[in-house]
Length: 111
Length: 112
Image (cartoon, rainbow over all chains, first blue to last red; front, side, top):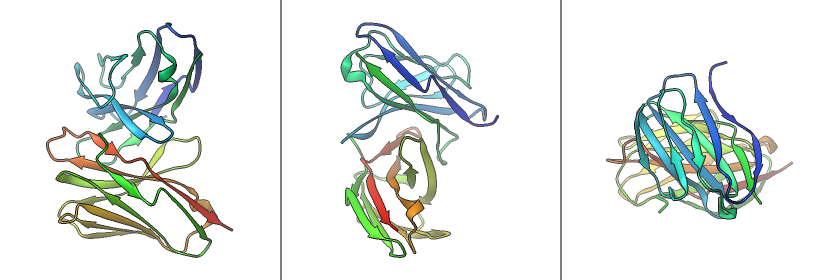
């Protein structure tokens, strides 16, 4: 199926654990993004990637790691989860200065 | 820091009325986009307006852009209960390497 998919949709993890959120897109878009959405803050950019093997920090990168070995995948890793990372995470992709396509989101709870 | 700031934060109207939402931003842009988010879902693109455009229409949506005031407005005409959602403006700033920066969003409630 064409589109952008995130997995898992829901995740509960314990403080200090490493957790990876997956994002896969089928369009071969150059740009991919990770946002977190929290009440009162809207969407804040965590990391983005302009192409395979090219990544850069966004507004709130601390505590997160990304990689992009293949154009279609852009996993986000929380190296040691903290309660402040409880959030809804959205992955998006776009080609140049066009519209962005979003995944369904991953609701992460850190206990 | 967030580039776009939407106004109002929340809007409640009756079905059939028009809904106007505003967005202000800080830096020069390539384009400005509006997105919609239904509860618990991902964002869906509604409309994109480029920096050299002043107005754009798509169905019941009308977007205006005033680059001198660094502001945009989204008008939804003849609103329906199904328009109930959160609406976000996103700016594509010049020199930002295609990063989209979002505002905090506007919650629109359309009463049947």
